[in-house]
Length: 307
Image (cartoon, rainbow, N blue to C red; front, side, top):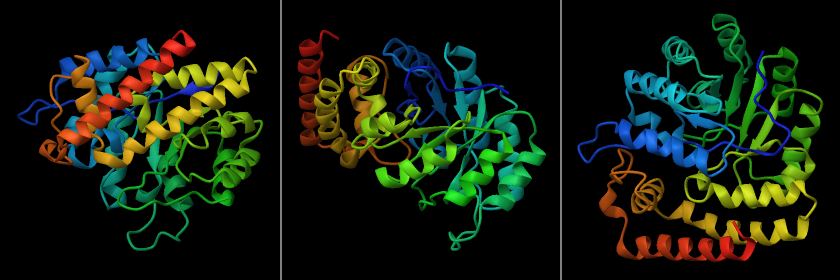
């Protein structure tokens, strides 16, 4: 079964879904977006995730997007896409996504428990999905919407023992817990990818496989810089870069994903900053100026390190 983890720290952006101003999926922009991610040093692509606005996409759209990304990418592609409440409907959605040929099928943890009962074990649903969808590698995404369901250490150990899991997008934002999780996963092909910039560098030093966060839709090349410096043992320089990236990452809390689409539109990657999750009119001129000033600071960092 395919391993998704490489010798260097991996960067796996949670992909945006470009739309036209009429709310149709814009596949020309999606192809340019794939190229832009790859040209800026990513190691894989995570399609059909929350950043892709999956809760606002039809199943037909989710399947077509995953198929398109897999067909056009030169790096491995993973995808999620199960958004329904009913387990039977989720299984139908996951089978459809698996049929696209993606390199791993990612399970959203909050979809694996009954609504209103986050304390329930995810394992009955995990075992059912693994049985019904054989062969394809699996992964987890601790998606914060509609609520965050973190995987317990016991569940993580059980899943490691299954031998099917290769990818975990960790959203706990807690370095002490990440270290415990890495202890459970040590020696396996089950890679942990941190979604939090503040703890990213330390988690990689502890053994995390890399980063999978929304800021890779702004400046993946700077995350590549940070991880390459770390790999070369230039940790102090890497921490300097991370300090900038941590401050930059505050823009996640501004008006995402509209602000990311606005930024990529200014680069000519996307044709529109339309989103289904939020009205683009909510991106004020001050918000736009914050994006522009962040980009100016990022350009300074690139010059300073010869990127």
